[in-house]
Amino acid sequence: MKFVRKTSYDIRNNYAKNLFIDRGILTKRQVEEGASWYFSPTKENLCNPYDLDHMEEALDLFFKHVNNNSRIRFYVDCDVDGFTSSAVLINYMQDVILPDHPDV
Image (cartoon, rainbow, N blue to C red; front, side, top):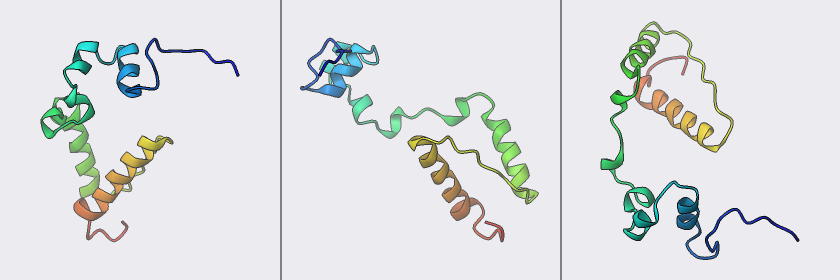
């Protein structure tokens, strides 16, 4: 069987860390120092969602439609993280935001 090696590191040991170094996601120094912020993130590693562009406008629009009992359609990105994030958002809406809404 022929194969093309796409990384310059030994793939049998510390595969993920070596792949991240090879792809430029982490530096070798960051991995040697542990890179705990990457492999074991904490709450402090999260960004403030309000720092994202147009977040306040998006929330205003969302709650405008919630308050008007508008129908809201979700377009799901058909990969694992798309299904997961959509399911989390829809469940949160059903359980927290709209628990007494008759159409949910």
